[in-house]
Length: 152
Image (tube, rainbow, N blue to C red; front, top):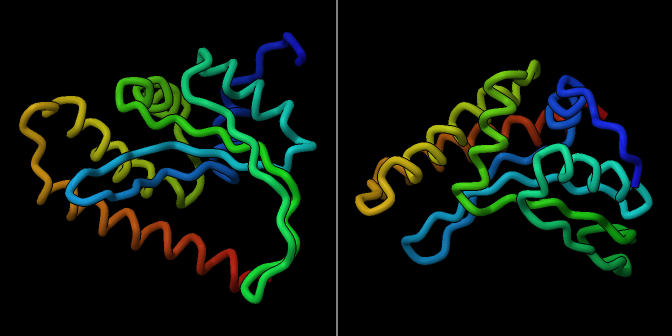
């Protein structure tokens, strides 16, 4: 791994193109996370980004898979995910100081509200509020994916 520190604006630009600000639901619980997925031959940059953020989160290896009816051949991936709410503060601090420049910024702001609500209301989480923000975030992320599909 290279020891040089990445430029903060490079990190933001990379996140503008490659990061996911999302959540998952299990029963009534909301798990909020930040993620970056890259081909495994680009693992070095994923490791450097994790290092930049102070080694919060984990890097997982996704296995290659054969083509299916819905997708083509998948190469191995490096998947960086920050899921602990207290560690997500590191991501928020960075992106508040070096804001996203694309339309992904709006999804980030909604995601940020979800994270901050969980941080500030740990024992009294308003799940109705989180559900509303989750619906808003899903709609924003859907618009972003639709654009990627249609721009080809």
